[in-house]
Image 1 (cartoon, rainbow, N blue to C red):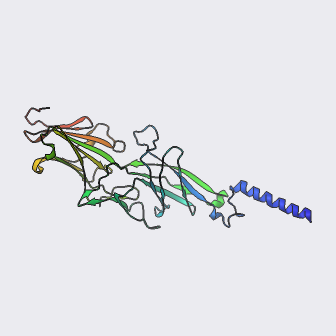
Image 2: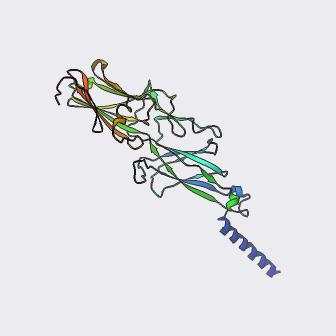
Image 3: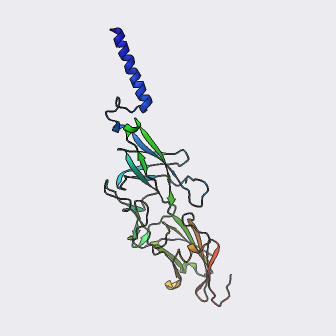
Amino acid sequence: MKRDLRSGIVATLVSIIGAFLLGGGCDSMIYDEMLDCPQGVYLKFYTKTPCDVDTLYPADIKNVNIYVFDSENKFVAEYEASNVTLSSDYEFLVPIYPHGTYSFVAWAGINEHYGLQSPKQGLTTKEELLLSLKQTAGVAENLNGTSLYVGNSVDVTLPDPESVLGAYYAHIPLGMTRYTNRIEVIVEGIANPQNYHVEISMRNGDYSMKGNILSSGALLEYPAEYTYGDRALSAQFTTLKLENGYNDRIILMGKDNKILYDEELLATLLLQIPNVNLNCDHDFVIRFKVEEQTYAVTEVWVNDWLIHSYDTGVESDY
């Protein structure tokens, strides 16, 4: 009798140990069904533009909103990673149930300057509106000092737990793209800088879940922060994603709102810089040189490249 009891105990222990070795502790002896085995995806956030040699981990990515989509690109769930410090070791776990094929969209830098939609489980797709830059009477909120990033993962398939006899976790890199840009506009050769102002506008305030600009959004004027010097002014702007086809414009006005310059921001200025890549370059300095005798722009420089020059017939003082 004792021998039979001892043999039964030994057999049970052997079965438990074997199950842990085969299934990593997730098997029918512990879970009622294999479908209850834990699964998930570890996401590693980084940036690497077409111009970067190395993978980077921006310090200004602190909070990340993660949206999970199924194989039909329908919204499943949302998670938030807070107080993030990106590094080659940092990963964020997204638990997944049930098994299947999933993809992920991550946004970093969403804050009080944006209106955010609430996606509906099983209904909202990646093409639908997620966020809008807030505005008042057509003037966008000031984004100075902020950054916005977005990234889309590849599809990842989590297997049926019964096929792997246990828990399964995938590790997926998720590259982030910066959407914010800093543009400084300098106007030189003007006696009364306070009489001049600069406008930058674009229809780029509304974005889909996956990060596309939605052309249905309103035309926005970006606010400028001005500083004045000796016969010069500086107007600093922070804009969202720069992309052709969204009514981008830059206007320089003088006294009594007289227009000295009115052109497309991208096609006629920024994209005229040799080897410029808007996926890599996010900081621009535009310099207008003005001849006040004729009240005309004589030169336009972008990042120290002379883009346009105009002969006014008057010799410049500088």
